[in-house]
Length: 262
Image 1: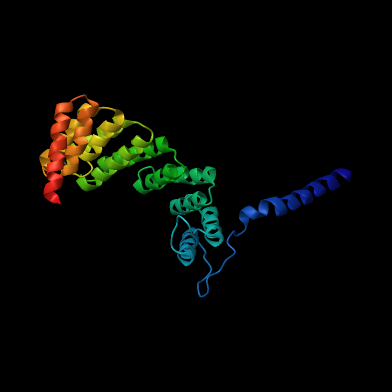
Image 2: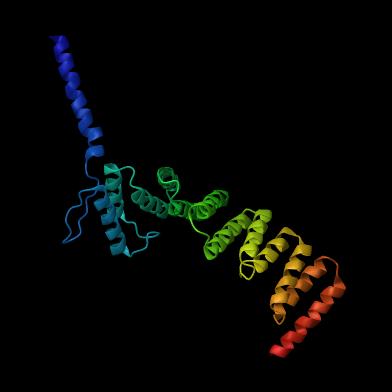
């Protein structure tokens, strides 16, 4: 009798525990409404509802993922933990709320679920930029470049932008050699790109390689012989190298062009 009561009691207590602790996992986490809109039913419905709340709040996913949108996203992911769109949007919401540890979990899961989706890497790269983890941002930008090279027909404009972005990130961690390699690739793909010689020259300068910086400014002068500022900058590079005669000649040319343009 006592044993039976003990078993019954354990079942009752188990039920109470389920009610108080387990139930939230099986309860709708969305408690908002939009007038005239039907109640969402599926994971995709809830993701779309979150998007509607973002629009109502101002339409900017970087600043307007409010509690209603969060509730809808939580419900979307309760119904389907593999809803990548919901993971990305919620990750941006966590970023907005400065909950970096939760944001990276969502972004990581999205990448794991769809490792060939470039957009997932773009969102995570932006997140890493936001929290100034530039080494991680470089890794994601590298994945983006590799996916573009593997999965898409050559698109020079897009590749130039991709390499320029990675070079920019590399410079933030003082990896000037990597930045120079990317600018060199840009020059190979598109020699007249505005992200080629000017940015590589600056990277050489920041590295302290004034010899190669001067060479790149010489190439730029070949393209734009009447651009006064190029002579001034090359003169500065020559002075760093102790080539004062060449620096003086460039300064005279700089003054001549300035006078002609005034």
